[in-house]
Image (cartoon, rainbow, N blue to C red; front, side):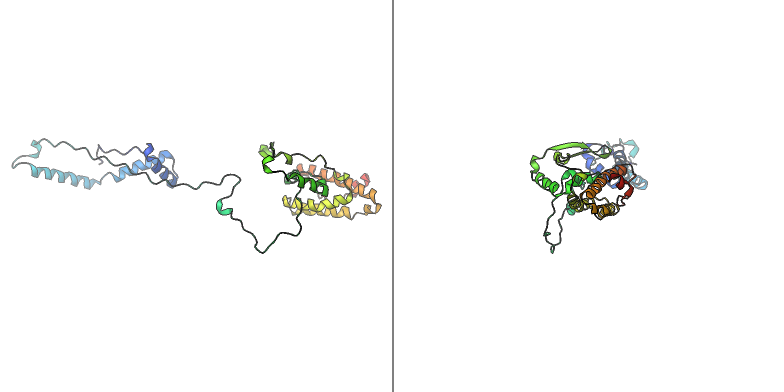
Length: 288
């Protein structure tokens, strides 16, 4: 049995914090279970086997008997004072192992931040002007955006807006979908005061903007089905027989496009979106 004077150390004290943390990590245990496991392990390693304890006691008795004078009995002698066992040294704290820290929000692990590129590629001969943040943010949430933002006038306004330095940007807090709070530049939250509705554009500006618009919705991950539908929408307007009526026909087509695009987005929020690429001739006739 374990000596009564030899007690297990208190593993709940601060001196054993590192050891307890290591047992918790390796065994997936709670702090209480880890302390209990350490105490049990200490007891197992400091309790001699039964046979060894008996043999040790007999040997000690025989040795004391030999030290007595001739004819004296061991039971007549006073037992020697029991010496307290040497204090059990506390196990050294294991070296603290720094656990890998998860990447903070908005950052990538260092091994994923290595920049790679095609060394044989070069910049394109023509660089496209980036549309306004307002237009791009709305497209990312599948909201309606007038094509004016993709006309030459709208792109020029956007290019002048983004020249301001990041230090001078005013930030605003907005509530996104499902109650999420976002912080973004204030100038990206508001429509341009110069923006025009689709039916207020010339047909030439309208068709100029459609290429940039198609690229933008593709980059905004609208999906191939939606991109193809809008591509056919613009193609069918551009090749409609009303084009033969000159300005009057173009005005009717632009008014149809303006109303249908807004209605398509309204239906999209209701999960009732339709194939916008198919021209409804009955509706167009009423507008004409």
